[in-house]
Amino acid sequence: MSRVIHKTLYLILIFFVGLFIVSSLFVRAQYNYGLYGDNPILGTQQWSIFLPVIMLLLLTGIGLYRLCLRLNKYSPKVVIPVVLLCSIAIQITIIFVFPRVPTDDSQTVVSLAMSMLYDQDYSSFETGGYLHMFPFNFSIVLYLKTLLSLFPDNYLVIKLFNILFSTLTTFMIYLIYKQLNPKSTERDYGVLIFAATYLPSLFLNNLIYNDVIATAFLTSCLYFLLRFVREKSWKAMLCAAILLAIGNYFRSIGAIVLIAAILYTLLNMRSIGFKKVLGSIAVLAVLFNVPGWTQNAVLQSTGTVSEPVGENSAPVYMWLNMGINLERFGFWDNMESYQIYQRQANYNKADSTALFKQEIESKLSEASASELIQMYYKKIIWTWTEGTYQMDRYGIGNESASGMGGRAGGIAGSYSYTNGVTDLFQGDSVYRTGVLWVVYVMNFLMYCFIFVRLVRGIRLKRYDEVSLILVVLGFIGFYILWEIKSRYIYPVYPLLIVLSYMGFKDTYELMFQRKLGWGRPSLGKR
Image (cartoon, rainbow, N blue to C red; front, side, top):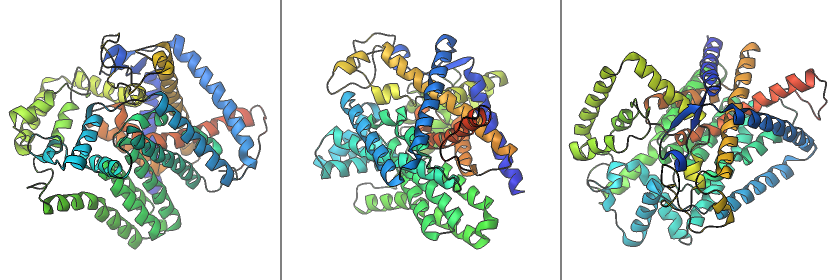
């Protein structure tokens, strides 16, 4: 029965990955603020660019992989620190070359942190305040307040901590890969180098928000979960539960990982044992909300808030309502949903919930089945094939929010100073467009190699990656319903790297080792 469930999960993900691949042959998902504004764009695929970039990246990948194989003779104690230090150096260079300043929610949480630190101003929890509407963002405000109180008041400090978290994620990607391939006799430095140089993770350190931090904690949680299943160690499970709770505290999508973790332990009940599975589920569930409960207790005991945080916050139905939109297929609806909560319901959660339910029912009843299918198709395809996690806006930024060319009139995300490189990347320049194409095509190739890995897993009846697949499927299902941004799926990029690298390695062995007889150092079994 367990094997049937494993195979079914693989087949479901094969369906979605296949859909992403086939759709990308005809449709190009884009996010280019300078050219289109804050809008999700689905256009016709540009094969004159798409195919050459595919060939370039494939040849580059093969060359780099063969170079990585030559590192097998060096100890991990040498290679791993060197790769991580080189990655840190690249990331530091990027934040100095592209000194993006906070905007939108990023600027809001920084301003709130400074107000709380220097003026003891917690009025944002009052009716109509930012934290009254979105109390889940108090975690990032508290984090920023702590950093600003301990270190110099500078954006660079916050970004440097982002770099540390991003580097931790890179290391965890390598450890997860090794956990899933315990019999490998190779060092597998290729996956480490891939993760250490993955462009979205390098650029999104410029985003002062919760994405980078939450990704580090949730990825670390998955590593310790794998260790628990393999070693049956309560220490590993406790670490996984704590990391999951912290990751969820920073970004409230931890429930997806929690459900995946519970299902994964249940699927391994035979090897873990019934009592240990129940105990592990209890540990995960009990610790999951401890940070939120603690925050509520402290805020109420100090008189910062007069009612439980979230009592009248924006309801989940607001984001579900945003997620149903025929014109923008679930993307930000330009304040329409906010106005229902703010103006029609006067910041009342219960009243706005009723209004949102009516709005959702109305949208679903007025749209035809064909229109809804098209909307959800566009929603899935854009979210998962855009591929850059919107690094154009949140990572690269631009000189100013005005005076720029293009229909958008500029990029939201100015610089604290400009230089020769920022001038080259201005607007929708060829340099910016080139980088976005490279990342987009890299994402497409990752899906191709994931597809290979999944199909091979079914053929060999080997389902070692089911823990990662559960999380990815959870994100796919969740963002079919929720408001979308391609940045929202950033926490799964570590899992896509692991799965795609496995697929690339399988493909390389099949095409070169077996067909052409190319030798390689330390070829081991996996």
